[in-house]
Every structure is written in structure tokens, then in C-alpha cells.
Length: 189
Image (cartoon, rainbow, N blue to C red; front, side):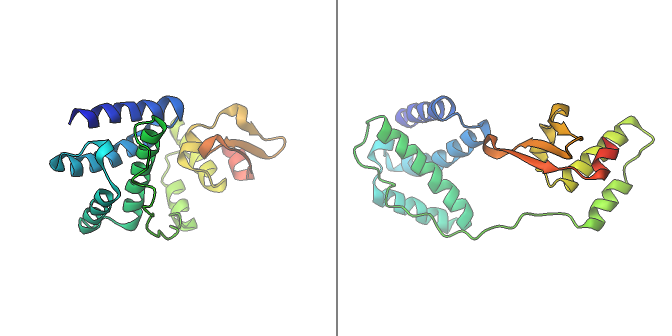
């Protein structure tokens, strides 16, 4: 249905321009709403015709497909954002997703390497090549400072303060934090 395409285009523009979201986040929201669209199109329902009951049936289908609670919560979040946008645009007076609750999702512990695994990685680096020293510096920095890979990739030399013994990291949500630098990192950089 053409109305879904138009609303999706406007929603994506809203997320990009008004909310300033990253492309990965925009893609995730878009993917979530496409799932709803694929459910509604055979029923010939436009985005503004979707009701609370329609959303309940949609969520039951997600459950029947075997989606995990975490994946269901992700889709619900995207659908809720989509309907918040439609309300904001003044095309609906009531949000059909308002009473939909997110499934309980347990906290997921981060995956990390053991000291032995990090030592194996460091031992496998060929230090006879120039990039070997760079790679060792990156691995040392990544694990001794507890950085995310994205934080390491965006690290600049101007963010390193050896005299004070820390590096400045710009993390998720553009939040800044100062991280102590170990002597092993200083030696490699």
C-alpha cells in the first residue's frame, strides 16, 4: 500500500533529521515497522487504521515465529516510535501502541576474553612488520582500557594524555569519559 511507503519515508526522515539518530538505529526502526507493514498489508490496513487489537495479533504472530523476548521488545520499540511519530504529525488522536508492554528482558552480560585468550592474540601478532606494532598497540589499548571497538576506532592521538596517565574516550551517546592508561599501553603507543 502506498500509504505505508509514504509514512515510512516520512518516519525515516524524522529519525534522521529531527532525532539525529545513527544510520544503524534508523535501519533497525525501519526494519521493525516493515514487519508490521507486512502483517497489515494482507489485511488491507493502512498505518492509521491499525488498532490495539491488530497490534496484539501482530505480537502474537511474532511470538509464534519464535522471536526471543529481546527481539520482540526491539520490534515493539520500533512500532511505538512509529506511532509516536504519527501522533506527532497529527494524523491520529490515539496511539494504538500505547498499552502494549515490552516483554521482560533479562540483563545480558557482556562477552569478554580471558587473560589467556588476550595473551594468545598478542603472541600471534607478527612484530617484524610495521602493522604488527600498530595491531599490538590497538589490542593492548582495547583490553587494558576496557574500550568498545567503536571507541578504539574513533580514538585520536589528541585524546591521549600520557603525562596525566589517561585517555579521553567519546562513547555511546557522545558521552565523554577519562580512562586510565596502563604502562603496557604507553610502551606500545
